Structures are given as C-alpha cells and as structure tokens.
Amino acid sequence: MTYQVLETSALPDPLEIDFEPLNIRYRPMAISTIWMFSIVFMLIMTLTRWQPFIALPTDLLAAYPLAVGVVLFISILISLYLYIAIPCKQYCLTETNLHFACGVIFRRIYSQPILRIQHVELKRGPIERAFKLASLQVFSAGGSIHTFEIPGLSLHDAQKIRQFILDHKGVRTNG
Image (tube, rainbow, N blue to C red; front, side):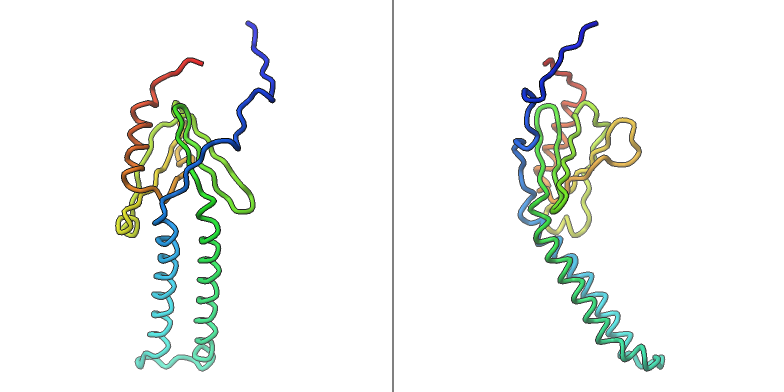
C-alpha cells in the first residue's frame, strides 16, 4: 500500500474559510439577557433590604449600596465583553464540513466533517424565541456531549443548516 505525501504548502489555509457572522439580533439578545438577570437580582436585593418583616443586621444593611454597585460593575464588564466577543463568533458550512470560530484573545476554530456528525439539535429558549433566534448543537459520532454549539442563528438559517446536515451526512464525496 502506498501513501500520497502531501506538501503543507499545497493544503488549504484554514484562515481563508469564508466565515459568516451570527445574526445581528444575537448581540442585543445576549446583552439584554445579562441586564434582565442583573435587574431581577438587584430588585430582590432591594426588596430584601426594604422589607418590613425581618430585622436585618446593620452590617448587612450597610453593605446594600456596595452590593448594588458590584452587580452593576459586573453587569457592565460582562456587557462590554459580549459586545466585543460576539462579533468574533462566526460559522461556515461547506459541502463537507461545518466550522465554528470563536475567541477574542485565544481564537479557536472547530471543524466537524458532516460525515462524522451523529446528530444535530436545534435549541431555542424563551428569550431566543422572542428574538426569533436559535442555536445548533452538533454531536459527533461517539460523543455523548455536543462537540460545539453555534448560537445566534436566525431560526430560518438554523433550520436550513440542520436539514442540509441531515440530508448530506450519509453522502460520501470522492476527492
């Protein structure tokens, strides 16, 4: 049996993959979700602080402004990170592979051959449904957890990608 030797200079450049950005509604959805949870958390702290039923310790009452400030600070930091990080998340579907790239500082590119995809799940939570978005979870053959997840796809695009994978995962191509 002879093997064909491949020159690395003849291989395709993975950085030349024509990635597509996530749906433009994904960034506002992610940032508004952070703020909704922060507001609910601050509301619970405020209701606990001003409730008349249980006398709270003085130290706990004095810590209330600091706790609100910490929640606001963390919410701002997470929002800034999401504002920068979400445009770095991209995907690409080719005839043979599904690629997903992410990372602000440390860039990662996940590539899954369609033939090795065991199944693909379309996932939508209540907030994603409100924004008409979906996530695709890709499971490789032999794995019990998803290989990677592509968030922030429009429902229409997620359904089309899922159907393409289901229609082509058993089709072998020559070459």
